[in-house]
Image (cartoon, rainbow, N blue to C red; front, side, top):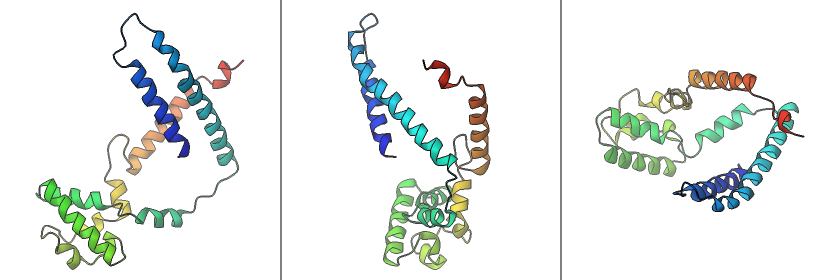
Length: 176
């Protein structure tokens, strides 16, 4: 995560360099070397560390991950989406969710842990099914589009990545 800012910064530098560049003029491109080479080095080092981490048998603490995912009102957008699907304009849905989040903060709990009666004070459009909408599982499953977090989409992305990896030329072929 820490290296992402550096690499993204280099991307912005390169995009700015290339923006509106005249067709036959390329002297500005001398400035592309530093961000490009630093990004390649950063990626190479990061992938090496990641490979070592995976090879060492990293253990994922699923319960800790689940607890962390419950922090920060991760399903607030799902609540707003629910209200919009029920016919509430997004601006009003956003305001209702903001009030619900403040209420949950006062009660030191997550939105999904609020009683239905508490949630309904922020909008009468909230039905009995809203609590199932606010689960982490429902939130993840609701992003069922290419690149989304739904399990079928994740499986498809993994399959596509495995195919691309199998068809890729190893980087070692390019090293001297």
